[in-house]
Each structure stands twice: as C-alpha cells, then as structure tokens.
Image 1: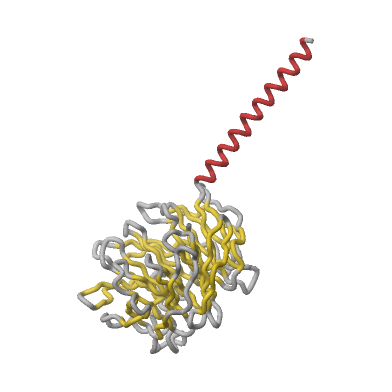
Image 2: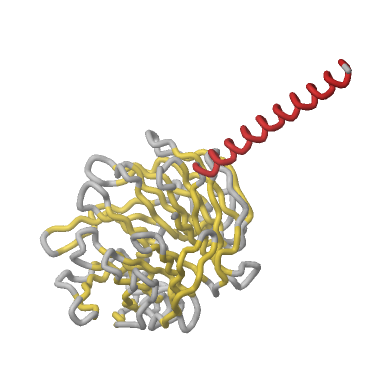
Length: 375
C-alpha cells in the first residue's frame, strides 16, 4: 500500500509542477504579446507578393511571420486615419486607384475603391478632417478625396491639381508628383514634384471640396535635385526635403509668405561616386536626428540637426539588403525598420536615442516590401 501511495503522490506532484510550468509559459506568452508592435507592409505584386501583409516587432527586435492581411494590386503606399481603424492604400498602376480597408483583427476588409485621377499613384496622406491626398507620379498631379471615418467609405475623386513644367535630367521630362503633405498648422499643402524640380503650394476650399493655389510661390530646387519626400521639424519652422536624384537633403526656412533653401547636405559618404538614389526621410520626435534611405549605396544615412538647423552626416548604416525604400522609426523610437524592396527582406535595428546611431538586430523575408505602417 505504501508503494502505491508513494507512486500516486509522485504522479500528483509531477502534475502540479507541469500545471505550474504551463501557467508560467502562458503568462510569458501573454506578456510577449503585450510588447508586440504590430505593423503593415505595402508591396509590389508583380512577383511573389499578393498584397498587404501584417507582422509584429517583438520586444527583442525580432519579427513575427508575415500574414496576408488583404489581397491588393501594387499597394505601394499606406496611411491610417486618425483612429487607425481605416487603412488607405494606393494601387500603383495605370490608371491608378486607391482603396480603403476596415481593420478587423489581422485582416483588412475592403470597403471602397476609387480612381486617383492619374497614373501610378505613389503616396497617400489624410488629415484630421478626413481629406485625402494622393500623388500620381507618372501623370504629375494630385487627387483629392474625402473619407467617411464612420464607415470607411472613400468618396469618388473630388478634384485634381495638375502640375506643369520640367527639369533638366532624363527623369524630369515632365511633372512627377511624388508626395503631398498637410502643413502641421493646417494652412497649406506642400507637394514635392521630382519632375518639375519644385515644391508646389496649395490649399483645400472646404466649401467646394476643391484644390486651390495658395499665395505661396513655388520653390525651385538646384538643377537635377529631384525633391521626393519631406519632414517638418517638431520644434521650429524648418522643413527638410529629401532630393532623390542628387542624394541630398535641403533645409527650408520660411520668411513671411516665401520659402527659401538655407543649406544642402549630402546623404552619401564622401568619395562615393557610384549609382544611388534617395527614397525616404524621417526625423526623431526630439528633432535631433534625421534619417534617410539610399538605394544603390543601400544604407540609412544618419544626420544630426545642428543648432542653426543645418545637418551633419554622422554615419551610413548598411541596410542588409538591396534598394531600401520606405523605413520607419517605431512609435517608441527604440527601433528602426527598413524595407528592402529588391532583396525581399525587412530589417530591424536598435536605435540609440542619445547618439542617433543604429545597431543591426534581426531580419525576415517579405516579398517586395516598399512601405511600412505602424498601428
């Protein structure tokens, strides 16, 4: 009997320990889930990709497996509404379209689809009033829409702002609207046109839902610069414009109604003379560091913002892949994620908030990633 009792006690003890272990593991898993940072990836779909993917960045900088959130054709740029329950994606085709999706867990449910008024839309943004702007690259114009934030329905095309002019290089034979930005105070819209080599300024007439030229004159850039994307400094009036064609960042200041270029800084290391074209730009929340991606040199340029607002190149961090397009700082700015289009991978880096520098952490295969959007 003692032997039987001992065996039974041993079985019960082991069972209790196993239960404790399972509970502990479950708690750890739940804790890991709390620390996940979910994000979406827009892609080009002329290869293995099927559309928009969802992943998460874990606390250690590694990735969860990509999940197909929605099938879409060339969803090359993404944006959220203010509540982050509606996702917008441009379809970079000819003719171009824009889709709205409702966020339902790990799935994106298509709500509506509209023509963008041009060819190969490559950028989309939305303001807090629900106005949506799309930049159509090949046709050199902007499309205006209105989003219903309650049901996610996107209006048909409300208006088009057509750009005119050209630059001096073979990429500037006509207008190529590359991005459009709402100025933080809401007073104007700035559009970067790579083809005309200018910044264009306009505003929305909310009574007519039309785009109108503002009083601010267009800003010309140095020959062959090719303005593409920009960022606003969080603590002053400076704007930093990334020039794709000559791999520079232009510091812009405003005086009354006019903007002017006050400094220009290369984002390539001294002596580098091979092919490279800039793609994306971001600024840290404290306004101390600017980051920009180089396609060809395949690096993220890290620049310090000096006391007068000019920039100093600190380093070029290799992206562990080819053709880095869009990249993002995580919401807490502890990590930087890079989308390498031509090597089909996403790469994570730990970011030092004091020095601005980046340290490689992890990577994961993702087909033709070109845009990263955090929830």
